[in-house]
Image (tube, rainbow over all chains, first blue to last red; front, side, top):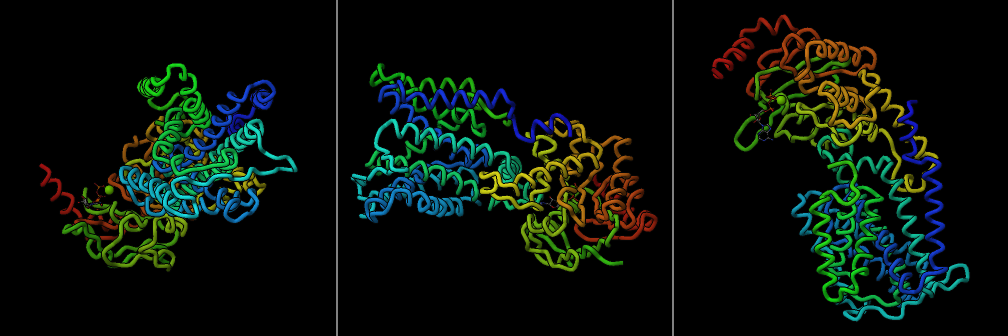
Length: 315
Length: 258
Ligand SMILES: Nc1ncnc2c1ncn2[C@@H]1O[C@H](COP(=O)(O)OP(=O)(O)OP(=O)(O)O)[C@@H](O)[C@H]1O
Ligand SMILES: [Mg+2]
């Protein structure tokens, strides 16, 4: 086999790179030892958005589809955790498999009718789906209506009660790392390539024996599962959830993270997620102007790096 | 002759335009056959019907005895029919080998969970997919370009990547839509060799659309001539060349163009 083939067999895993990852993870794991609660809050949120952006990246980046209602899947996870613990009185951990099933069903519901649509219609349908979920949870009794669910019990893991910000820092860091590993493995797999084929030329992909509808559906479902698992832990961390967390703005913010960093490229998406969380915090001193500064910075980035800060080669 | 592909009474319309009109066509097992005809005769439309991209208004299409009309393109490919496109349809921003690996999709199984958990089955399959794709690139004579982005390859190489990609699906019948277009004469000679090797070494039947008559006469054992969606002649090269209707169809059209 040629050298290039060996290199591509396991994409990019040199010893130096592996060492770099270990050192980086050790450093991130050491953060709660010295950082104050404010930093831990911001970083936990950053890891959480890394997971969400990676999930949406499967749909938008890998499969090249549009989704303006991604927050709905995040809501599915959070409300599943809330209902399982509060209404059913069951263990938080049960909400994980249940939310995966619920998210898969939601993924099929949103994916199914959108498969035949062109991108402009896709935008409207996904946006509508996101709003539908938000308005439903706002009006259903089981989801607590407009005030949402309060007093969600925090889970216990191996006898350790997850009730500090330090604990959630680790929870979301772990989720982000798992998200990166899963994304990376998916990208370099049969299904990951199928996403790229369909994204690149749908007819050619079909002529190669690829069922484009199933492939797209798989992207929506897997993206939904990322968000739902994140949503479960979000509910556990916050102990209270309300419909206003899952607005169109939330979906846009996650999409922004993906597009900003460079859709399709995992390091780019991680960077994008960090930017959308950390940027507004950096400009906190600017006061009410901070969202303006944020918006202008984004505009500049999009002007000068239209494919994202750290884009994949395509486009 | 055992027929691998049997088409009978194939008709196709777009609005009021009758593109194909009661076409009968057969390709035998192990045959190299050609479909020729003036521009706009409906040749590519025949391919699009065979591969499930167009839905014929009537007629039947059988592959190895099985009726395939109405099936989706990916199902037809799985049943053993592969095609190339008249205008290259490569995944341009992906590497040559990734393009060829696409052809292995319908012959492999690993799903998302296999990938996330990196199961042994998944790893084994991935290795096999890559190895087979390398072999197909070697078969079409361009093993050295495997890591290059398909869209940046010279035109002749891009054509070969498309053939390798189609062959990787393990077809029993290969449809080539104007494979010689844009190739120089040396490349065309290699194309003739390749088509023969596909049939002789791989036991794959070939149906090709081609405008280069020299190439058609040289490679194909059976020729079907199409004009305005109808079959106007068929037979071997000598019979077709001397058929007055064929001569008229080609000459008549050229006079129109003048
Ligand atoms: N999708 C379509 N919608 C409408 N008309 C079509 C469509 N596809 C083909 N046609 C028409 O059908 C006729 C035959 O087209 P086709 O592409 O099959 O011809 P062809 O024999 O392959 O020609 P060429 O040698 O130029 O490739 C043309 O008049 C074309 O305009
Ligand atoms: Mg044509």
